[in-house]
Image (cartoon, rainbow, N blue to C red; front, side, top):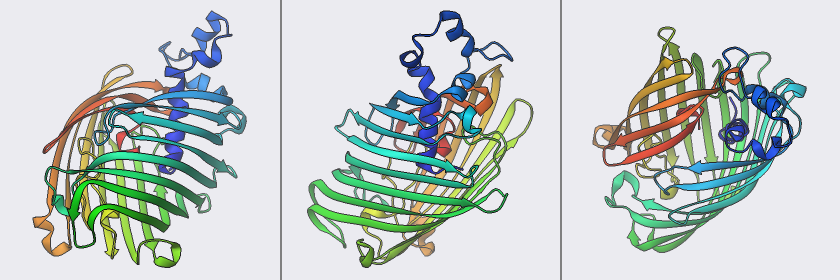
Amino acid sequence: MKSGLQRKVLIAWLITSLLGWPLTTFAQKKENRQSIFRDTLDNAFDISRWLIQKEGFLPVPGVITEPAVGFGGAAALLFFHSSYLKKKGPPNISGVAGGGTQNGTWGVGAFHAGFYKNDRIRYTGALFKLDVNLKFYGPGLIFKEGIGLNLDSWLFYQQLKFRIGESNFFIGGQYLLLNTDNTFEKVIDLPQFTGVTLHANLSELTAVFNYESRDNVFTPTHGIFARFTATYSDDWLGGEGLYGRLNGSIIGFIPLSDKLNLGLRWESIHALGDVPFWARPIVQMRGVPAMKYQNNNVSLVETEINYNLYKRWYVLVFGGLGNTYQDFDNFSEGSSVATIGTGFRYQVARLFGLKMGADVAWSTEDFAFYIIVGHAWLR
């Protein structure tokens, strides 16, 4: 599987024809424009053939629906170094992007996603300026109502992965540097920090091990994706003390019938050493605002049932349980959250296995709406 950023870049490429294809095809004849967006199998609207041939520059609009920062918009200018057809696989993509939300959050940056040596080597790099406004709830929800927090940050990210032989296994590493000025709306009092403003550096090296057997990377219907990482940080790297994190996640998709599909997700994250309070693991599930449930350890499970209602249209229901806890001895005393939701999908690119649609989700205390491209677990 591609890294998170690689996958987002590919999804931007896939969704563009829905939102922005007239910007690049206005000169075509009407009959050509219609035919290239029709599937030869069922004559339904489909962007697969257009995507296979695309190369060069491409503007991409987008929508932000993360409940922690509010609704907003984004745009990117991508450059495809070749077409999928010419390369016979995912093209190398470079781009610049920016966006903002209704609560004043914004970000701009540049990135590159590369697939080399017949997809034996995968690279992702990014540099972003971020100014994020959200609520800080503290480890174990110690601030029940949340405290306003502004993160004025520079983010630098590098990842390189190698396929092991001809197998579905990848091994590699990544580096993250996050230089942040944190400003709280009022004085907070924690064992690690008391005050309003805090300058912090995250500088982390991570070993990455992946297994990938899904039928596609966008909206899978069968197969497994497993990811295991080990993160290390220390003063000599420019970080905030000696600490680490262990992360394991397994996502599986099981066809129950021709129309019914089951998805299962498990994830567990464990912090080791003196992890800064702002860098502790968080629960990431639909219906849960980012950074609300946070502590030294996080465990969660989710399930999703997807039903093919009619031709390319699908409906789904999903739910999950997450828990954050200080250590294993007090797992039952942790801050837990339950989620439930529903949504719909349309298969917009049959040859790529891509579906898109929308979800609504409820958690113990929150509600959220999402625009989904691909699968929500793989964003």
